[in-house]
Amino acid sequence: MKQKNFESQLKKDYSVKKLCKVLSVSETGYYKWKRNRNRPKAWQVLLQKIYEILDEHPENHNYGIDRILLALNQRGEYPSRSTVIRAMKKGNLLHESHRSPDGLTKKDKKALQPENIVNRDFTAKEANVKWLTDITQTPCKDGKLYIAPVMDCFGGEIISLAMDSNMKKELCIKAAKEAYMLRKPKSGFLFHSDAGSQYTSWKYKMELGKMHAVQSMSDVGKCYDNCRMESFFATLKKEKLYQLDTTKMTMEEVKTEVWRFVQYYNRTRICTFNEGGYPPVVYREKVAAGEIKAAA
Image (cartoon, rainbow, N blue to C red):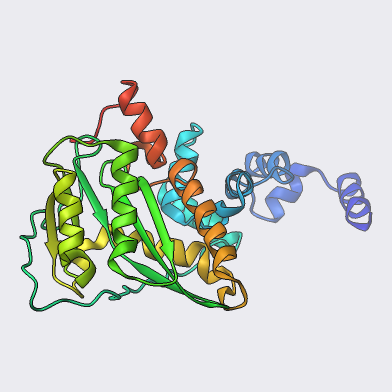
């Protein structure tokens, strides 16, 4: 109220032209400021749109800069990366990434190890020609929960997921068989893992033989040789498991959370690896429908 009274008094005593001259401000600049002073700034408008994206799904609050940028693009907004960073910084939405490989499986030195055919090429031009698998773990109230997913390199979809209180070969076989029954890939598809004893076991190799799969294998402890699978584990832990106190939860409770996150990961979460940022299932379906082309 005092501000308005002061402005009214100034207008009575002095003209705008005279005031601008005294303050060394152009009249055009003054009127432009007056028109825009109550309008939200561009970064505020953008931040509001970012908040809307984050509020669409509880897990979206884990989105970083690149996924926010892709989500905005999908809505017809094309701000620069620096503009998104500025808006997210203003909204205290930037957070650090903490990722580290597991190195969980142990090598069987006596086992015959297949060649690393994948050789760090985690791309695929079509579905069900190149799969990845590995094991990770998380502590629970009633012991450790071991998680063994199978990922399709085409789009990064988690095809199957086996979980148990141990990391024996049967866990890996279960994940592999479930993926095969769901997809029925053609003979000769690649199935990549590290050289953990589970994957070099005779029983596991026999199951892959029945599937007509070609086994590709990297050495144990070389996380970059299976980095796309490791990246999924890091995402699962950073965006879900590390946000829960799993040591106070039973294995069954944690399993439920993992299943829910995988559904979100496959169908909703922005995937920076895919064209347009489409989630794995959406990407696969759009390519199959001819709506988009698969990455070369």
